[in-house]
Length: 68
Image 1 (cartoon, rainbow, N blue to C red):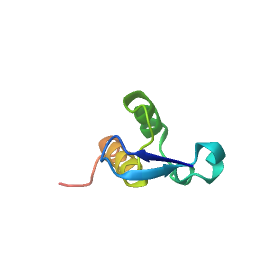
Image 2: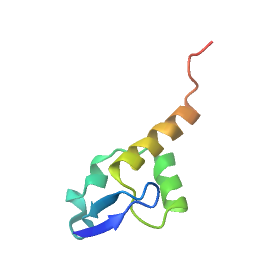
Image 3: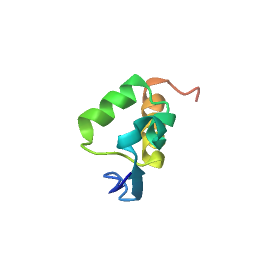
Image 4: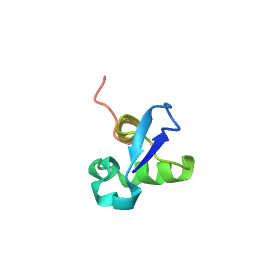
């Protein structure tokens, strides 16, 4: 396990790249668009909060709201 700082919010996180199937990031289901965006825009791991926020923001950009 490796201590890192999230490049988005600077929060400390634990990366488990040595045992990736047990890392927090694999339990967060990103859309293909969010995954592609993260790969292109960040060189390091995002914390779980930022991954979830990124995913939600991109979903909201794609799916129009029902506001009148």
